[in-house]
Structures are given as structure tokens and as C-alpha cells.
Length: 507
Image (tube, rainbow, N blue to C red; front, side, top):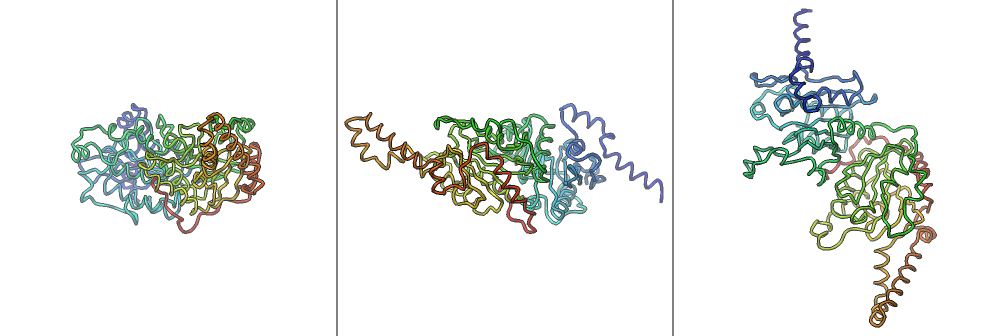
């Protein structure tokens, strides 16, 4: 074989590496960021990366751009195959061309057919207008980029990292992913400044159009972190819950204090995150969307080494764990995520019900409240519910604690249930008597109302509900972890279905 021909190929490949681009690399590092190749290396096992399309160059010959601005291929994470792609912001702002769309589409096809997870670094400015139209397109997949990402939803885990500016088509890739982790200084938007100025006449910077802090507040991203290194670490942690289970897990130190977390005074709030830590394996709780609908916690964790999904009311929140439209959407999407990837679920219930009133109706609660109920009824993964304290009205249905399919329904001794708050119920049931007495002796009326409420609480206490077999068991808090681990061991993680169960809704 002609040595010159071989050397030409080797030189062309070497020119695409970071070593051949010291100035570009220095600019990236000056911003405390990583290059496209460094990002990939930080995710994958050392030496496992097999690159596709390294020789690709921009169709516009007047430009230079290693790999046409998209480094992609396959590698392993702790031995498990993963597809990975990183847009390169040093090449025309990480923009998309016909050629690199074709590269990405081929990656999507192989990820789909091999059923391997996908990690994407989605920084970039969308279409490269002067290079996209009419460009030659090499190999491609059976779907276009955005349709292909939609096809993957619910079929393989998809992760996007945004640590800079991600707009238009790049932002769409992020939005079509199951999990988006973004840095605080990043920005995401479906249109950049030229489009916004043209359509709306507004002169805004990219950071003003779609700052990460805004997306974090409205639920547009799953996790916001400070640095790119933290974002890459979070992407890897998230992915591992889907890749494998562990043979065992160590309890958290909070497990020894679990009995004291829920106060004896039923009017006092407490932090549900402490309960979660006390039940789950040590240092394994990974919360999603922590600042959006904060009255409802969604998290991945390990329990006895097994990956599980957690939904939990947060009594410490402003509305004491009540469910509004945002919380309904948060629950429903998380159920879909866990169900699509055969991850068992744990529901921790302390819920005063759905939000009611005009503001709740204006936010669409009449329709949104249905989403978690529908998701639970169509879920097939195991669900284990533990009622810690309140479960009123339709709230239990949203938490899978009523008629939804579930493997076990447990209660702690502090649990109480009812069609509505027991104080309000006692007033409605006895309102004629109470109103009559109230006209002549308000203090006596209050005594009667409190007496009826006490009687209703006693009737609906955990032990009496257990005697009526409204729970499979009423247990001490410190028994919870062992009972759940026993249930998980009797129900191995189901193999992935040969047919996709369903997509994971964008919300």
C-alpha cells in the first residue's frame, strides 16, 4: 500500500485532534470550559471512544472546521455501550449543517438499533445558514435529527448537557432529551437574537432570551449546576441509574434517626428529603427538577443497590405538599420516564390534596390533575407506597396511593386519611349543630367542633385503617427500608420490552 496515501489519511485525522488546534483549545480553556473531545473523554471509559466522521469538513470550502463541528461516536461507561455526540463551539459556533446532521442521524439510527443510551453536548447556534441549504450530505440515518430524537424517547435513555449557548436546532435536541443538565451561565432558546429581532422587534442577547435560571424555575431543565465539570459528572450519574443495578447498598446515617423525622405534632412540618435519605442507599439520591413545583420531589436513587424512582410530597413547602398543575405534570412525566425504562417506583405520601380555587383553575388544574392519575393507571413497573401522614381527597390518586396498580401499600403510625381535611370534614358533617351553638356560645361551638375532629382522626388513624385492611401493613418507620428491599428482591427488574411501551412526554 502507498505509504503517502496512508500518511495523508493519518495527517488528516490528526489535524482534527485538539493537539493540532492549540489556539482554539486555549480559548475554550480560558472560559473554564472543555473542548468537545475533552467532554467526551470525561464521560467515557478511558480508551473506549470509537469516532464516526472525523474526516468530515464544512461543505463551504472557504471555511475550516474539524469533524464539521460535531465530534461523535460510541464508547463505554463502566463497560456499558453508549452513543455520544458533542457539538464543537469553536467550529462556527457549534452550528448544524447538512453534513453534520447526517452524521448525527446515523448515530441516532445505530443507538436505536443497538438500544444504547445517548449523551449529547448540545451547545450551538442552530443551522449554519450559509452552509446548510444545498450542501452535500453523506451517510445518514433513517430519520432526520429531530424525528430521530423523538423516536428514541421512551426507547433509550437520552441525556443532554448544555454548558454554553444552545439555540434553535441545538436547543431542540436538548428539549427532546429525557434529561437536561445545564450550567448557571448557559442559555437555551428556540430562536436566537436575529430571529427574535426579526419576529418581535426585540433586541436581546442570547443570555437574556433563555437564561438557565429561568428554565430552572419553569421546569425547562432537569438540573442546574455551577460548572461544566459538575454538569458532566451529573450526566454520568444520571446515566448509571439506567445502565445497571448494584448487588447491594449501604444505608445512610439518617436511617438510624428515621423515627424522629416526622413530628408528633401533626401541625408541624418536616423535610421529606430527610425521609428519602433515611430509606435509600447512602449518597445515591439524585433529584430532578428540584426548584420547579418544589412541593413535589422527584428523584432517582438506589435501594439495596437497585435503581428506583421516587415521588414524594414535601410538607416543608409553602403549600405543604399540595398538588397543583405544575406538580401534576412533574409527577406524570416522571412516572413515564421510570415506566419506559423499567425502574421500580417508591411513593412517599403526605398530601393535603390538590390545590383548589380560582388561581388553581386558571392554571388548568381541572385538566392537569388527570395526568398523574392516567400515568399511574398505565404504568406497569412496581410501585411501593408509604403513607407517612396526610392523604386527603384526590391527592392519593396522584401519588398512586388509591386505586392505582401497586405492589404494596404501607402506612406509618402517623398516617391519617379522608375525603378532605378532617377538621373541615367534622365542620361539614356537624355544621347545623355547631352553628346553632355558635350563636350563643362560640367557645362551646369550638369545643364541639374539635371533639368531632378528634373522633374523626381516631376513626381514620393508621391503626384503625389497618384493622379495616386499608393498608397491607402499618409499620414502624425503621422497618421501611428492609420491607422495600425485600419487595424489590422478589420482583427483579424486568427486561426491556421488544416493543416500545410509550414515549416520555416533554413535560
